[in-house]
Length: 215
Image 1 (tube, rainbow, N blue to C red):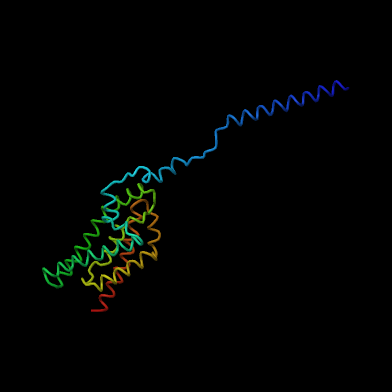
Image 2 (cartoon, rainbow, N blue to C red; image 1 turned 90 degrees about the vertical axis):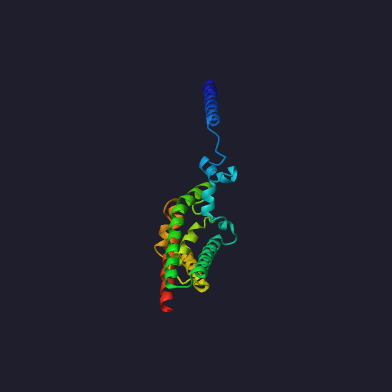
């Protein structure tokens, strides 16, 4: 009996030792836990690491650096757009006089400028968003410029309407009434640019209503 118990105890010890050895081998063979960021996460900050920038895209998307203004790059972009519109209008008035034909000319020039910038800025905003690792970078203000110019289409060329148009556009751009909020979810530069186009259309309607009420 005693020898049988000794054999049983010895077998249990051998079994425990064998199992412990196998478990240790499995732990050693297991790949180490990931402590470094994933490759996808690394790419998010690729610009900071490499400094890679597509020059023409960054110039257009930031509207020649206006997007780097702090604080409030979006407001800065709108102010620059309204100022360009007003200055161009003043030059036109100086050389041609203030007439109904000039107002129509100013409206067409503003509409064409907004359309051309929109067509160029959509791919530019897409590139900047990818290179900066952000879906809608604050430095991209070409959307504010396009929206502001849409707001001022056919508006009287004076500082009062430039200011009113600026305030109305910023109001709609910030509050984003339906369906503007949904437009933001479009991919790449489409979502970045077209939500401000929507805000500009809202503001354009308000400016035109105000213009006709004040006639």
